[in-house]
Length: 541
Image (cartoon, rainbow, N blue to C red; front, side):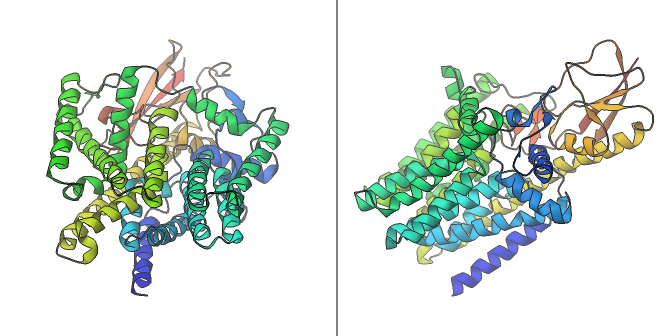
């Protein structure tokens, strides 16, 4: 009962943190899901109907959006009552975060760890909190993954069909939120074979998601002329690493993003292993530092020197890499405990997601590591229990402040992302207010900036067929995607700047920070003041 009361306090802290940012501007791919929700309100069964200009050329929405539509249906449901309000939608999406926290607590009990410590280590992380403040798929998919696993663990313990049905339904809903939730099925097959040694009712949890995705594939094939589920995996595989340099870079970038997503791992280095193991981690870290510093970056990903301290970036990269290595070490230690179900399950869960993110996904980003949130909490909690914290000795007075520091860092990262997202909203409003009465306003770039520009009446530029007349304006956000250089027919009339007000950069090529995509930077975030966001205003002569 005391632990349950403590969980309520943890949820209250989570709510205080979350609702401090409830007015966050829509950002990154939020726009695509909002557009799909608008379409659903018009034609509920044709969720990806109509066209979207996302790459500078209008195309069918089902070609652009590589995600299933469940989150857009949830957005549409909220918007049908409250409209497309940031506060209303973000308030609704606190529910997946709260349910995820409760589910992680229950998983901590199932895996015989300190459930409260597991929950705190998992949820007060940049990857969990930042993506929880978006309206994309990731946090909702994580909720379904966690509860599918909770129901599965109860089912394997009780062998009751209802729990396997609930597990299957949860995974199916997760896969209809984001396809990667289907990666839970191989883990369930392993676990079911291990526990029962023969086919049985446990297969319900496997069959239900497969039937759901087969039905979705059939429906989208009939609706759009192609199945969207398999196409998404083909799209990701086309951007996999091609040569040895890519594999080296992806491994190191993956470790850095892993460590940045779970910074507590760096602060808890003393607990990761014995003297020889910690010495090995230190030697490996020095080797990474020497490589990165001598190359000025990685093999195929140099650090930006534009207004950034390359030595500081190298140190930050190595610190995040050490944190990632420590998580890998903690996971490998599970294999040393013997051939038992829980250790093997966590081992395969961790490395399965790590391999997928680093070598099979279209890019390395923090959002793809969100499926490791429960696993990281479980692994770190189990390790700290073995280290002595579980027994309540003096080590807890060392660990708990460290966990608090990691949590504060996570909140600071949320604020940095909040501030960065807000610049696009402010820029769209100020630019359109200033220029829309003078002539027609076009714009390049997408993400949240596109949403607010279109709301203000501006038009996304069509690279192939732009009906631009003399005196019309084109806005180019420099720190954005899918941009093209203009020719001599256009003159620049103004550069508008918008400041972040943060000391952490989350999406800044100049600071090598690429929280949402490593092509922006090899760090998930960097401890340097971000550059002001620049918006170039051009007019056709």
